[in-house]
Every structure is written in structure tokens, then in C-alpha cells.
Length: 201
Image (cartoon, rainbow, N blue to C red):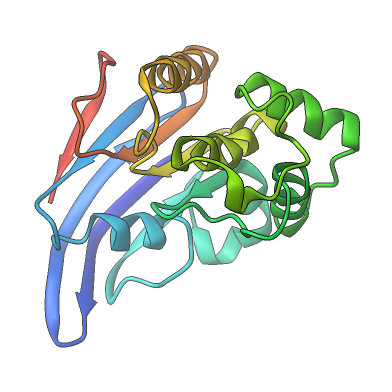
């Protein structure tokens, strides 16, 4: 359902990558690899529709993502490398706000179920600034639980997670792919998953 054809990206006057083509279907996942500064995060932002390639095109279900923006955003969730949470808000408030920005309204009960699933029971109402780095990461990952999206775009999702957190997220990714979802992710860590496609920058 996702297809990149001859995509190129520049930062300033420097070409990060060019002529990049690959496809990802439902029930598949891909690991985007490359040295620091090679353009991994830039590519994820292009795929998420947050920027445009200088050359080439990105397609979703055979259509350029820019022409099916509403449908695409309803099918996709992008979680960036940085925490992406507001320090002064609680984990509960962050989750509801983040989902609202994606066009989804979550009740308190739905949001609490998601936060409990990621291991934040008892910390739902604490300001995020008092949480550990790993707990902040879990607060962000609760968006994956709160509403099913077909396509997950994850930038360094294992950062700051402890062993249990890595195991939890790995299992969620496995389950998502096995039930027909798609995942495109970056990670400097060894990913304890099998069967993925490697996209090398």
C-alpha cells in the first residue's frame, strides 16, 4: 500500500539521498538504516506527509499521499524521535490532546485503558516533567494502543525504554504486523524481530 518511487531529499544545498524506491504492503515491516545524518528522520517525515520530496513521489494505495491526505492520515500514525509530549500536561492530557490533533476524540476511560496498557497506571495524572525518560516514551507510545491505525511510522521507538519496555513494544509491533498492519521504523539498536525488509540510506 505504500510505494516510494525515485524519491530524493535535500537539506539546504546537500542531497541526503536520491533515487530511493521501495514498497511496503500490509502485514510487512521495514527497518530504515543509515549513518547519522543520512536522512532517516527526514525520510520518515516525507513518508508522514510533513514535507515534500524534491524529486519523486510517495503513494498510498496507488495515489500520491498529497491527494489522499485525509484518508492517509486516518490510516497512519507518526511518532517522532523526540518525546513529542508537553511537559506541563499529564500523560492523560497528552494522550487526549495528541489523538485530538489526529482527529480522534478519546474518552477518559479509553485513554486510561491505553495508558494502563503501556505501564503508566498510577501515573496518569502526573505532569510529564516528573516522569522518567522511559515513562515519557511510554506516554507517547500509548497513542499506538489508543486507536488502531494501519500504518505505524516510528522514529527510534526503543530509545529510553528499559528491557520490559522493549519487550512490550516489540510484541505490539509483532501483533500489529501479524494482524495486517504495517510498520516503518528507524533504530540504532538491534531489533529483535524477524522477517523485516531493510531499507538502507
